[in-house]
Length: 490
Image 1 (cartoon, helix red, strand yellow):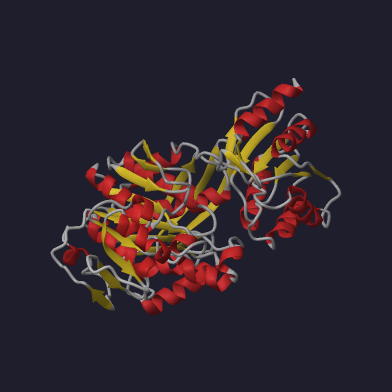
Image 2 (spheres, helix red, strand yellow):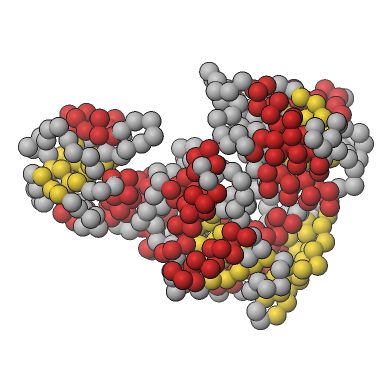
C-alpha cells in the first residue's frame, strides 16, 4: 500500500521528508518486528516509550515513522509523520492497512465489568444456529467458528492485532463478529477503527480501580464504545451506570437505545424466573408480546446475559424459534457457572467471579439452585485493586456458609498479605473461615470440609490455566485440582 493512501485517515501535524510514493508492506509498533518497507508507530507506553526505539526500527528497515514527540534527529531517507497521539493513530493505520475489514461484517461490542465472555458465546451460538459464520474475540480465546486464534493473553488485543484478526475473519467469510471490549482496551484506543453495529452494556461494578483510579474514569472508558455504534445500543437498564449511560447517549447520539432487565420500565423484561441445576425458565416480555424461555445455563446473571444476546438477535432478524432453540441448547462456557461432574457426594461449581458484584451474584444464584451448605474457596489478585479485597471478604462471609481464603495470582505481593486483607472482611460477617496460602491446598482443604449435599464453589480462576507468582508463572488447572482433591478424599 502506498504511504499516501495509508495515512489519509490521520490528522497529520507535520510531515518530514515526504515521499508519498513509498510502498508500505507492514505496520509495526514493536521495533523487533520491523522489516523492510515497514512503517513504525512510536507509542508512548506505561513501561517504555516507543520513541526510544525509532533508531532500531530504521536500522531494521523502517522507511516511515509515526510519532508524537519531537525527535533529536531525523534520517533524511525516512518519512516522519507527526500526530498528536500515536496510539490513537495506530488503530486508524491498521484499519486502513487491512482494508477496513470490520465494515464487511456485523460487529457487536460487549463491555461491562461482568458477563462479557458468556454473552459473546451466547451470541455466537444463536447466530451459528441461524446459519451464520461467526468470529469471536475475547478473554478465553479468539475464534473463527471453532478454530482458535491466539489472543496474546489480552481480553482486547492491541489495535494492530485486532485489525489483523478481523481481516482473518473477513477472509474466512465471517458475517458476524462478537467482541469483548475491556475498559483498558477502550482507554488505550485498541478498538479504534472498528466499525461497531451494536454495543452492549452489561453492568459496572468495582474492578480495575488500580488502573482507572475512580469509578467515573472507569465509566467514561466503557462509555466510549457506544458513541459511534451504528444500529443499536443495548443497555442493562437495571444497572445505575446503565441508566446514566442511556441519558448520555440520548443527548450525544441518534442511535436507538434498547434496555433490558427485571424492572418493568425496560424495553425487554425478564419475569417469573425458576432456577435449577439444569438451567432457568423465565418469561421474556418483549415490545410485541411474551415468550417462554428455557436457558440451559443456570443463574440470574445468565438470564441478563441471555436477554442482551436475544435482543441483538431479534434486531438482526433471527427468528424467535431459532433464538429459543439456541437458548435451550446453549453449551456451558468454560469457568462460567460451570457445574463439574466430579463423582463426589457434593456438587462443584467453578466460576470466574473476581469482583465484588460478580461474587455476590454467583453466591446468590448458588443459594437459589442448591439446597446444601456453600463452601467457598476464593482469593484476590496481587498488584490489582486492593480496595476490593475486604469488600469481597465481607460478601463471602455473608453469603457462604464456610469460606476458605487462598491465593489467586499473587504476582509481586506476599500471598498472605492479600489473604489477610480478604480475611479481615470475612470475619466481620462470620467466624466460619480458614486461610490456606497455596491455591491447590486451599481447594483440597475446601473439599475436605464438604459433606453430602453441600456445594463446593471455586471462584476467581475460571478458565485460567496459570498461577502468577513473584518470580515465576506456574501451570494451574482448577478442574484437575478439584478432581485430585476428591480422589484424596476417597
